[in-house]
Length: 131
Image (cartoon, rainbow, N blue to C red; front, side, top):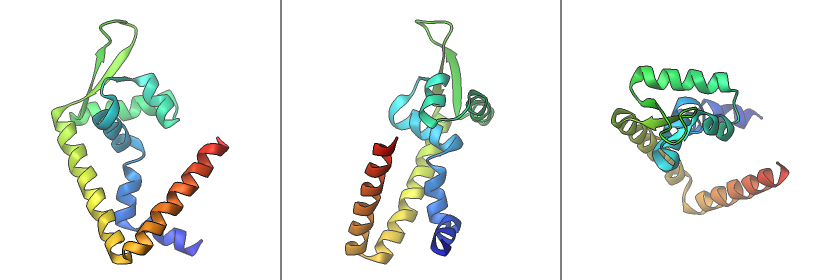
């Protein structure tokens, strides 16, 4: 448990964690696979309440990273699009997270890195099967 506490406090790993939740997760989701997702899709994807999704989207809009627009095919739906400013920010943060993690993997060496990736994949598979 002590090792897990240390891992949580590590800046490089925290950067990776940030990529999977909150504003950064939404930006990466829009950037890499689902630009134009609906707010409902985001709520389902990240398994958060609609109020949390709305707060994230409000913040992203205030920062100029995303915009909401009516769906041209169904005016009742709102689509979320990443802006150019949001793309630049998300790419920069994504690159930083990757570089930080690469440094960790280089420090532990190729054999341990391969083992770590193998174990993470195995844990992920087990967790997905439990859901």
